[in-house]
Image 1 (cartoon, rainbow, N blue to C red):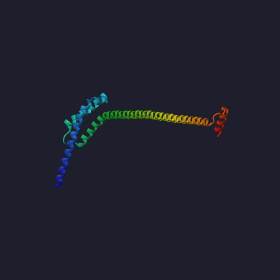
Image 2: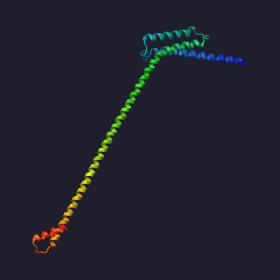
Image 3: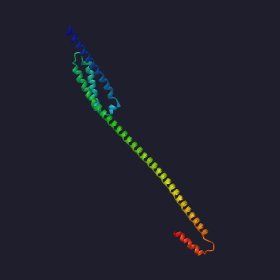
Image 4: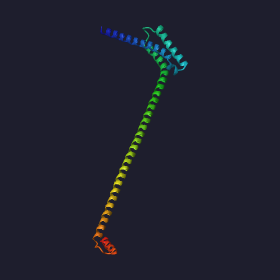
Amino acid sequence: MRRRLKRMQKLDDEHRERQRIINQHEAFIYDSQGRLEEEEFVQFSEEAERSEIAALLSENEDWLMDEATSTTPTEDYKKRYLDMKTAMNRVENRIDEYKRKLEEERKKKEEEERKKKEEEERKKKEEEDSVEEEEEMEEIKVEAEKEEEMEEKKRREKRERRREKKKQEEEEKVKTVPVGLSSSFQLLLRGRERRK
């Protein structure tokens, strides 16, 4: 009983697998026949190549409808499926390669644009920093000039005060010289005072 159940289970599994392969086989034929007409497929294949694939698909469709039976070995389906898939993949691989190259070029272009943008932003920042630095230097220069002017003004005022004080001191000395002394004597006294 157990053996019989196992054998029935095995037959059931084989039937399901066979049905899956048949369905896969049929679907591949119909999908591929439609794909042969697509612009992309036509662009990447030669007329002779498409004719050869179309004949292979047609032959497998006829075989599936007329010759394949419930006793046809699963391996026959697999071999025929692989033959069709290989023929289609020759073209599909060219399409994939073209798309891969396009994608690489797109990424390369994006990378170049990104680098260019980064370089432009870096230059812009450098220019802004340079202008900012020049403005700061100009401010420092103006401030330094103002400070220099203030120092010069203080020095002039100090010199002026010293002259004024000296003048006052001389006037005081002249006042202290007794009246009646000759002017030459007054000059002599002033000279002595200066030497002290």
